[in-house]
Image (cartoon, rainbow, N blue to C red; front, top):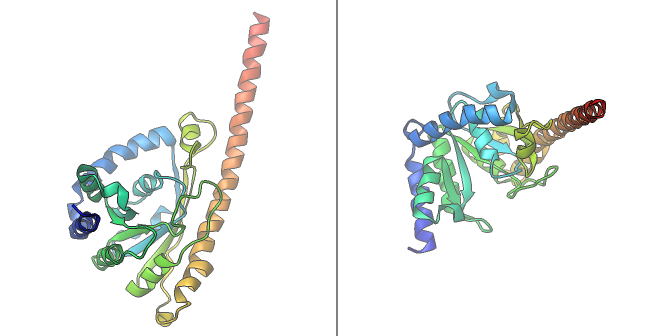
Length: 252
């Protein structure tokens, strides 16, 4: 099967999958949610900002592969994600990814098929999640591309900024071993599209850089500050425990 064929087939399958038919997604989420809460103790702020119905675009900074999993746990309804096409090449894994809410995009070039799927899902009233940085940024926050904002304006839907920290390499391990770090998410209030400037070439850039990305950036910086304090507390507790153990051994 040619590359173009299998990518298109996965995209078409994703477009046909409605919220009501996402049984695999709902089963996996139901299993993972209590497990993730027990293991990583994620903190989710602003969960009420995710609408219970209607289309919207969730935009977030991108730390790791696990960002999508924690987004799913934070959302009361299914989310659809763009994923790099390589994940869908294997027939079994590709079908599973689609059933879990993802659809392929060919990176490095304009993929009209992926954009068509995103628009179709939004037209159905679904939630679509995009990572404007276009790649993983392990520390801090990168520069956003304006594709998500352009899509929001063209479809006339709200953009919901989301800030995520703690999912990067080493972050989940520290959270697992209770070393003062936790996965933290902030779901910011929805930002409406700039409908009156729909035909403006600057509208998407203005929406992303003036409204959406500043909210995400401020959220990441605030969460990083809290995490540094938590890590310091965790390190201090470990040091005190170590000194106490040494003192007990000397007494014995």
